[in-house]
Image (tube, rainbow, N blue to C red):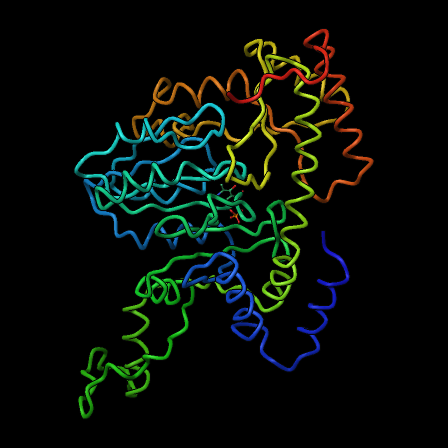
Length: 404
Ligand SMILES: Cc1ncc(COP(=O)(O)O)c(C=O)c1O
């Protein structure tokens, strides 16, 4: 994953006399990211979580507003909504992609819906044509959580350029990494880009000092202190521009740039691993694998399949895999059922497909370009042997229970 190219980039950063923050490497990474997606703006931050916090803050949601979200994602996608007085509606998912289902979405939209927060689950792009049609007709903002989807394609375009605003994660498990942690926000709107730039940095920026009418004197707000004109002006700016410091370091950006150039290779390797696992699953008619239609490229951040036999059948398979050294992490527990969202009135039955898949059918297997060939062979053999043990005899090769 990280090789001499990243080491060389880091050495360049460390040998340079340039500041280690807000410099040429960050500009370059953002420019390359922008070009890769075909968007007007790409602004780097320190994590996908921070990207989502900033992006959701931009939506200016008010009490009484409604937001439709997917339940099948990592908590960071919707966590900032917990602090807002808005009504959150969880939209059930499609049983193959685990993405927000456009049919269910249509039924949840009201005159008060202001935003849709979706994820491209595991790297399979959501049904964006249908979702954007619904959103545009009602002037609803759509936020894409692209934490899994860098490297995916949707009918000739890329996630991150399919809606109004998008957030990426460069955590070390993701499709590329910026030294373990990092994130990016993309959008086309200039006013949003300007706000994001201020919010991600608590620096007082270029407009510093411009807003002061010439000749105006600082009022004596704090008469016991001798405020200079300069300090007064700075104080006003920082009060007006409450932000945070989410600046990606030059070292992280330099690594991001190298990683972005390798993205297609990484995704191709993920695809190879997924193909081999799909091939094993194909021998069992009840096992469903993820197969997007033509024109859609899955980035395979996660490998997901669905097994028959109910909760017991799935548990037997997980145990069989575990005995062979394959650890399963199910991603993700339906969010409307976690205590924080239950406390806001959400309950079982709200998203029946997401619930039954998670509790009974879903299996996520390791799928990462960092796996060696030997590890992939072990994984594939363990999957084949476990399915054989749990589901008895495989059908003749070639029969499969894939998507319709
Ligand atoms: C769907 C999704 N959104 C957001 C995040 C948060 O990203 P980060 O770990 O960079 O904060 C993750 C991370 O796992 C994720 O999977």
